[in-house]
Image (cartoon, rainbow, N blue to C red):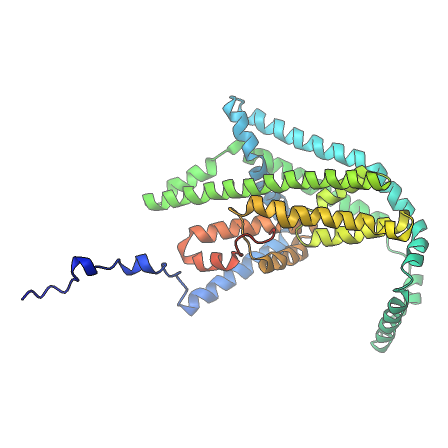
Length: 377
């Protein structure tokens, strides 16, 4: 009798790996987890301290991914890379400067009209003025118990130097703006130099192949994401501007641009947009039911785009956990302000792609993944 323990052909079963999915590697050494946590905390601390230099670099990297399809298109028609980079940067600069010059006048006009319209706004929301006054008096009483200075004393101590603060903010913005475009030019001009150098230092062919796969997946997925949301945000801005014009709201171009910019910040941006369009309607439109129409129409456009069209376009590439998305938005807004909130989702997407491509981090990448067919990240 044969001692062969293998099952007969008709009872042969596939290997275990073909029945159950391969288990994700989880760190088993507490020292590894501890050192990894310390490394992440140190990196985040450096990102907070070095905000002025890191933020332009990260923004330039994201803009490079956004402009990469255009760079490849220009390369196919044999435009030299330095000239193509200059053309794209000048074009992007022209768009930003043009929008700024077109919108600066209406924005200043609304800023001057806002103090005059506050009594009208207060009259229209007098239904909630009572609870607000009660909350205000409670807070003032609590401050008095804690020994905080009274409101009158704060007012007599002198108004803050608003003009100086604005001037300082503009100087910082101009400096970061120049740094961003300078880094962007060299990134576009360098092409795949960094990727080639990284591939060259990898010891094994498998590692070289993995680096190339991850790099091209990051470029493909993030570029598609940025291009898709940019096109959709432009369409949202156009639809909102046309709707505000139909309602008789002044400066519809301004409100279309506001809707476009707010849509770059998921979740938080539309919430601010709801409050903005409600306030604008309350300040300018009569009767009262019509004052709610700007917010209602803006909400309808956002729901159609953010919960239906864009998720359908991005479902194959991006399914991020919405809880992780909102935490990332709040965290990077605290770290880097509004630019950080805009960059939060692209950085989170890049993190997920890297974790999916590096096997020891696959479990963390799976944790960042959302449900298939969910709402927009």
